[in-house]
Length: 74
Image (cartoon, rainbow, N blue to C red; front, side, top):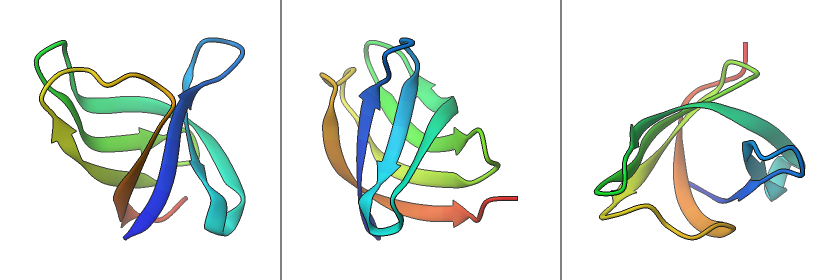
């Protein structure tokens, strides 16, 4: 598992930053994206996918969380 930061970019898009690889990529899909539950599988623009434990409610960004890589970049 890796520590990642999820934040909004200047363009208003969510992005995931992985410091260990100095990688920042836009999040294209969030499995659970409601006010009651947020998180799960996150798909990135480069084809990679990460999993974070869902939050009970939408968190305030930026936020640092532990994420597990499900799929490497294409």
